[in-house]
Length: 465
Ligand code: FAD
Image: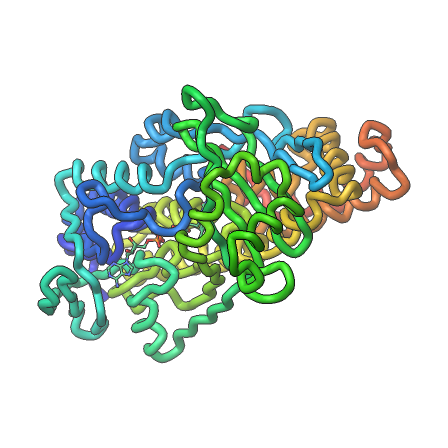
């Protein structure tokens, strides 16, 4: 087992969102960090940042940026989204605030901007060197050797490194090698839905053509459209649709079929999307996968973080937030241990159960977003939840708020969320208006079911901002 303080150079594979931030954290601890990135430098060459054009950053991700002094600047480029704006087929809009008040919101941020920002600040530490067009093909954990292919010339080389961090995303090459080690497993589940990015351009003078401070959702049962605002007044829309079946990517083969589908199901969005046909038939159809792997490390020689360790589907807006939180927890583990293996072991112990919990919640949230947000009963329950959050501050806790607006471990958010849903469902029985909820009964239920759970896990619940 080698000692942390005797290691000078470490290698990070992948300069995506998590790898770039991780490099900063490692540089702060005094390491020289070599980062190998498969893609060209997106600050110099026009390439897509991959995946979604924008994404939602919330408390966990912001906390991670704050530790390295980057939160404020990131927030200057972000658009607060204070609630969901639901677009029913019949017209009219329904708004649901995300939090107990406007201070609780999530933030829409450009993925490309954030990635470039993180890379530049990582290099700015003077301890991080990012080599682009360098694809890691193979890892020999015993010898501490990486096989690296130069994507421009095709040349191959070997790189020696005492410690390697795999932040190379959901299709991780480092994980692929790790799974070959005895006792390692990786379970990958692909969603039967894909996604397509579409655009609502800005109006005259960069005006937003829908409510700017909301995440827009067109829930349609087995599929949905969502839209997040961009700084330039446009919205990036994502259509989540089954690959096969009656309403599916397979069924939309021609511009006529596409337009008819939008006319029928998204009539208020269609007039705002002049480039719909072009975007739909030119943009790639993305796939979504949940990866549950473990252990995430090989002794003290290698560690997976971010999507490489635990890719999740995007319906809680937490993949990156979770990966950023990994960096914070790793940093704390490195502060507590003198040996890499011990730090990696502790990190895996602390994070694995939480990554599994957010993976499951993200899948459950897909059903909630695409189906339940259109259901009056669900809307009533959400309003009851809000009444309880305001009437019993600190006593009543709800899952969405814990996941998005606190750093309470995901596992606890999952479990307390189940208790909260039970209480809300019981109190909503026979109710037609949230304001009529029986607060005495609510107090009793909260004190019987939720308070003891929170007390039992008081360490975890002490972590809010
Ligand atoms: P990636 O971003 O995938 O980065 C991996 C990097 O490694 C890439 O730069 C890649 O080029 C490089 N790489 C890959 N293989 C190699 C190799 N062999 N050698 C060298 N380099 C390599 N999360 C949120 O928190 N909020 C959201 O709102 C949100 N929305 C999303 C919407 C969609 C449609 C999707 C698909 C995901 C969304 N996510 C969101 C999840 C988020 O995108 C991921 O969790 C995040 O990108 C993970 O970062 P990462 O650095 O671990 O992996």
